[in-house]
Amino acid sequence: MTTLLLVRHGLTELTGPVLAGWTPALPLDERGRAQAAAVAARLAGLPLAAVVSSPLDRCLQTAEAIAAARGPAAKVEVDERFGEVRYGDWTGRPLKELAEEPLWRVVQAHPSAARFPGPEGESLAAAQHRAVAAVRDWNARVAADHGPDAAYLVCSHGDIIKAVVADALGLHLDQFQRIEAGPASLTVIRYTELRPFLVRLNDTGGDVAGLLPAPDTRPAGGQGDAPVGGGA
Image (cartoon, rainbow, N blue to C red):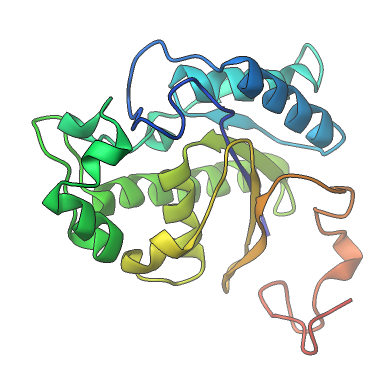
């Protein structure tokens, strides 16, 4: 019953108007640093077996703020599979400009068929595959080292988080544009042997004290069963 907390990085000077992608040396701006500090304070009381990050600066800085709030012994582990989609030749271009490209409509309506241009371009399907594979690997690692009820956190990017959520919900990748993951938002997925449960999505405030399940609150039929009637 491993629980995954997905946090999107805080704002940068490019977030929103420009497709940042793998732009190097792109740190959080003042707003993003404040967001990282706020989410770190909000999650400080939760027991986390690991804090994992994309290798890009904006995620590392967000994850480092979260780890620092947990004490000097906490550290950030980097997994490149949680890195941003490789947008190839689209990287660094304004979104208003990209919206005029024929590929834009494919990304919007049929993302499973979209591959970004250029030698460094990646398909959205490949990006989802690597991110979901990383989640499965970390689920197994965390459960083996810390028990089946352990939780861990991954700091990643909007399209990667959306792709992981779509997989957890059993949605085709073509539906992932219906999901939102804003800057510094929290998304929580609980994985069981039977099915994943989406616990929170694009959450930017509120209490997290009851976020992780207590051992005595498992559904009557087993850890992968959904409570009939919705639960308490």
